[in-house]
Amino acid sequence: MNYLPYAYFDGDIIPFENAKVSVATHALQYGTGVFGGIRGYRSHDGASTNIFRLKDHCERVIQSASLVKIAFPFDVKGLADIFVKLTERNAPEGNVYYRPFGYKSGYDLTPKLTGVDDGFTLYMMALEDYYSADKGLDVMVSAWRRVNDNMIPARGKVSGAYINSSLAKDDAQAYGFDEAIMLNEQGKVGEGSAANLMIVRKGVLITPPVTADILEGITRRTIFTLAQDLGIECEQRSIDRTELYVADEIFFCGTGAQVTPVASVDKRPVGNGKAGEVTMKLFNRFHDVVRGKVPEYSDWLTKVPVAVAAD
Ligand code: PMP
Image (tube, rainbow, N blue to C red; front, side, top):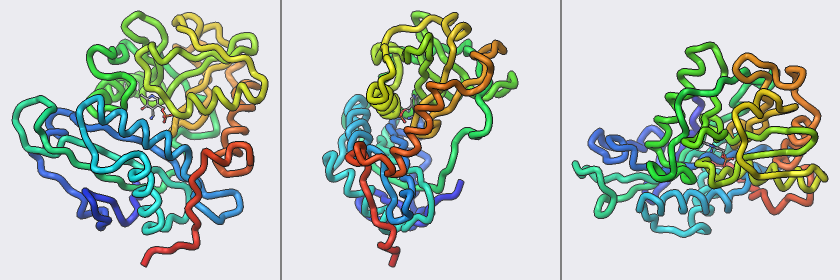
């Protein structure tokens, strides 16, 4: 990965390579961390890095943290300010990805939450597409079930829960697929290993509800807003596995995935195997919005002028 030179680490901006923790760190041993994933897009006129839905992401980081009793010495606004300061310092030349990480930094031996010290870091990397954009993904329904909210909070980005994602993604790739779709404990469609899922049936955009043990994705919310504004009928309801086999279109959405069409599920082509009309409409709208080409959604962008260079 192409990490940018500076990171924020417990109150200071320091060289990325110095942002380090001990092997005894609670979060490293027990997965007691929470993270975020946020994109900054170079604006279409090249004048700014537009951080996408920064406030919403900061809210979710803080909410994820509260689920596992990690406290920060800042609020949503204070956290957002750290993103802006670090962006100014790193002066990125292209599109970037931010990784905030709150974690249990103490060396306590007991797997618990209260009384263990907390830490926070933010670092950045250059990132273009996470999935190759030129073809849809071949996916499988994973034998691994999505973590249940009564096991590990499903609506937060809790580090330890990503063992679940890693197992599903790894299996999918080992079997020659690009990605996995995980069902929840009820056997209903959940999401991908690191992205939410939407299907289109007879022109209606459908996605599982937030009570389906899914991450409450910010791109998921974004796509629903864009779809509604484009006059596309939207529904949140539980989705059966076999609906994946008869859907006209399927796509993943997420900060990393952006909008990524699914070409096949369990070797069954989705529609004609090519990205569908609704998917492409949303794909194009999404990319225009994040690059600042659609003024109605400019509230979603935190613009950091490119002219502010590192010292
Ligand atoms: N589900 C999971 C499990 C994820 O890791 C992600 C990526 N953050 C998403 C969904 C998409 O969420 P968002 O749109 O907020 O990035």
